[in-house]
Image (cartoon, rainbow, N blue to C red; front, side, top):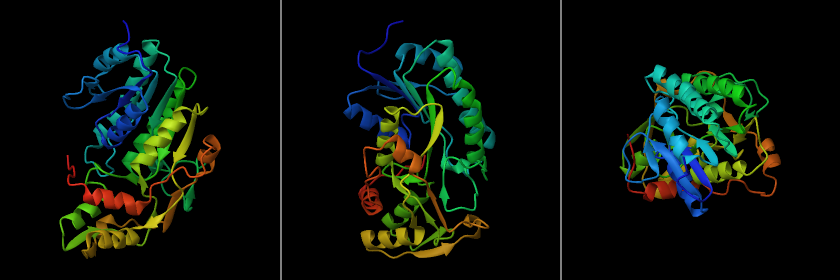
Length: 308
């Protein structure tokens, strides 16, 4: 079967998800032919409706596209999702369906990026997390990603694959189930109060545009059969996020600490090590350029929030 395109092609699972939308936009500007799978019917002819667990449909789509690069982003990513069985099915077996389809078709993509998560590290009792640490996930999401990583390693001798472990990132279009969009939405709606956990903790909150740019640059690197943090190494407290939103919105909000959102033995500061990332991408001094204040302002000024 002939390819659907003449340009260098990219295939994105979860192309209509938060990260996928930003990645597609970025890659189209770079001149790639971009294809992907979605969970709902799309007007875009390059978007194919497919459940990752439907291997037959996935197989046929890959046979049509024959992509040069593959970004595997599709996953159940909300930590508190109640359907844990579905989380493991999609995150583990959906990924294996993708890789087995590629090998059965004898496709030879130049590189495959598999999105894992910094959630695999769990509680390390250290402020800076690096790739050499033994993963100790503390929730089903992190564990499903770790199981996925372990199973995917069996394909290292067959395909050019690497894992990314992104730390927290946000931006326009992120679901309000997630922390930063939830905070921004409460300010946008001029709510009187908001329920949060410990606001004295410091975490990374990077911009999705920096993340997709880093993904693209890693695709052009020599990284293979390896794992790498996608992070800035810059932390900020939730308390400071709240202060920034008060300035942006000219609105004050009362913080109510919900014990359900407070983790025991929570580490005050948590961020990723950028040492390996800088070695792989040494040409740029500043890998992550967007300031959180600008990201928050853009999110606040953006009129639509998704809660699907």
